[in-house]
Amino acid sequence: MSIFSGLDQISELETKYIIYIIITYVIAIVLTSIIRKLMSIFINNRSKFLKVDPTNYNFLKHAVSFIILMLATMIVFYIIPDLRTLGTTLFAGAGVFAAVLAFASQAALSNIISGVFIVVFKPFRVSDLIAIHPNIIGYVKDITLRHTVLNDFENKMIVIPNAQISSDTIVNYHIDDQRLCRHLFFNISFDSDLDLAISIMQDEIRKHKYFKDFRDSEDFKYGIEDVRVVVREITDNAVVLRASIWSSNPEESWILHTDMNRQIKLRFDKEGIKIPHQHRTIRFEGDTPYKKD
Image (tube, rainbow, N blue to C red; front, side, top):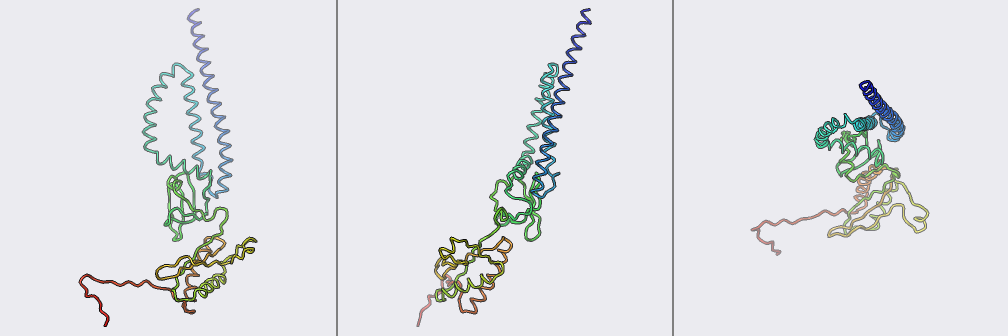
């Protein structure tokens, strides 16, 4: 009878462990389903806002499911004493493998984490015009977990790792208020009519279709002009004028700026306003000094 009693105890013990295992994995599956459902709602809303395919972020849901199931497996190994020793050995070996894998893939993981931060904190969105370096500027075409794709003005696709773009200073021309004030510089000679040059610049800018007058009541109160032209600097050979010109968005601002460079130069030539040129005198060693008769 003692043998049968021992078998009954073993059977009860196995049954208890099986119940623990079933309960643990049921809880893990239910928790996974709830979290994946909440993440799907969040990702779909973010994807509509960013105008990207939500399948780009399915990796997050799969990663969460994998982590929860791994935790459930670790709990099962901890509950069952016979598996605890085996689990310690397996997890020790897995720890070494995970360390090697993490070291080899740290760049990829950094890009994924940075991609998540970009989606959550929204420093830019798809279709925004952004600049990262003076030579890297373009429209955002796609935001994935690994990289961001820009389309520049030469129609080249620029693929930038998310970790790099997250660590740089980003200029977003389309976030919130798209109005842009661009400074236009012109040098005139000392003998040119200063007031006439300022008047020409203001007149040409006002005539352009992309120039906008964004003055408010305070500006009118203090007599601020719609086109402010100031003497920015006086150099050795020129008077530097700077005009502040407003437009509705960066695209129109660029056209306005380039058109004004041409139109003002033509008006200066017509009105006799001179743009000075630098003159250099070069002397070679051994030349005889010039003597005036």
